[in-house]
Length: 309
Image 1 (cartoon, rainbow, N blue to C red):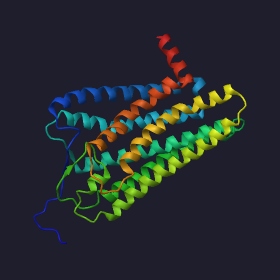
Image 2 (cartoon, rainbow, N blue to C red; image 1 turned 45 degrees about the vertical axis):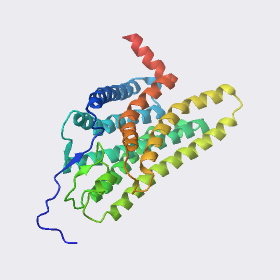
Image 3 (cartoon, one colour; image 1 turned 60 degrees about the horizontal axis):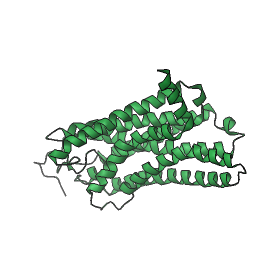
Image 4 (cartoon, rainbow, N blue to C red; image 1 turned 60 degrees about the vertical axis):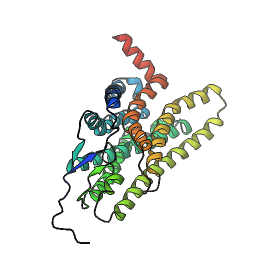
């Protein structure tokens, strides 16, 4: 259908936000402000601890430090704007700003997914092939795995972003969310979105399911290896090195799969917003806390650092 001459291209989008309840907005602002501060401090603190502790100079903590860096930027892509909108009457974002926010959100989310699967492969090598672990997981190989995760993450994000934001948008411009997400933005387009819908489903599905399969296969082999151990202490130690990672994986994938692995026609509800705010704001805070509390090596170093002050 030809476009009418009086149609004006959308230059900004309006968010519906987290809530319209004025009494709840201030509470949410204070709560998520504290969550964001803890997220930044905890993740950067973990990066500093790993980088300055000789006993933590191994592949597991190398990947963990990059996961923490990703969590800082991942949270910073969404949370500051969300906090600003909670205190604003009009929750707007420019067209270019929306594209930029989605680009980094999609890239960093994918990188986190890939790093979590890489960490499961690292645990598999450490437990199933302990004698060859250090010769296989060399510093060069670890760096290549991190670079591969970043490359794939930014590449797929570039594809999704260019597809979604090259379409025509002439109104409406209300996004029923608190940040720019491709499925909700595509609903506002005046163009045929079938191709972009397929691109989104394929990229998100391939990355999530591919990474999840890597994790499941790695841990299936780990469980088999652990059950064959004769030493009870050895089994306990092996399980303890995996528990933190398993908790982070469960939290992250649980919310992501709940939000994205559904038919595109599903109605976006308040439950989706709760799930979204959980993995964009809360999960980046939980990751370093889980590793700090459940990992004996990290906990020991933190306690020693605190006592040193």
